[in-house]
Image (tube, rainbow over all chains, first blue to last red):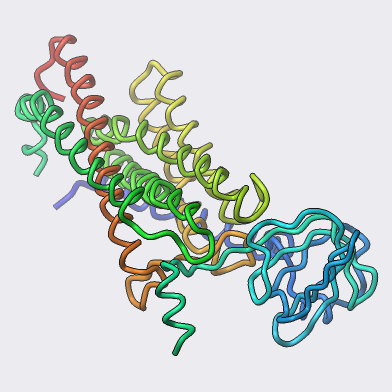
Length: 139
Length: 235
């Protein structure tokens, strides 16, 4: 149906695409640690040695864990398996709330203690009007 | 099959259609904006900041869709040695690039009040930035090479390199921990966006698609005029 040249060009493109996809896949696979934006408390708990560099920890803010004093805010980040205590002084974003996602940037003191230099709120994928949310909680 | 793509017949369409498409675009955009800004409810958590999504998400979708189309067109043009397909791809690119930039800028504006930062080097945002760079390379390649054969090949290579990035953008939020939230709209499972918010989102997507069509028709018309001026009636 098609000429030999057309088939060859088609094959050429297919081979290029396969090669590219494979190489990009391998590159990303080996860079996994650097591609992730934050680590979970469990990953930090399992890591062999403590990172001295600036890292990011993400998870949920544990219920009833936020305590605010004059110059410091303390809370617990949890992924429902492991927890990590965070201290921070500075302004938190508006959406920073208990039982909502959070990403803290800063330094590990030890496996359970984290000193944050920046707090980001992580928004989840749920969008709904307030009435619907209220109805859901009413159930 | 390619008889359908005869320039003379297409030229009649591309020179007449834009005004109708423009009318339709203005109509759909005004409905979409009224829905998005006035009638749709505010979000339970982020309140009015959710309205940025009605521009951000459609713009991101369209820019991804256009890049995929450009790639398919360029590869087909390369395989079948069809010049017209390259010109269609070339005419599609500018609006895709503009929507890519819009997605990045609106995302940044949304990120400041919700996340607390204008920019984060997470996988979704970075891969979207890379897409914008591929768009830029593609557009520049058409400007710097005079020789047609050369520009067809180089622009095709750029799209092939860039297309690998498209599934990475889509799945970055599932494969890695990112600051960006995962997709709210799923075709196979239940969407996590309320229907009162999904509706304006879809209308805005239609409006943006019409805008891309409008720009495409105008750009493509220019390409056809260029061919006519060269005194060639066929491609």
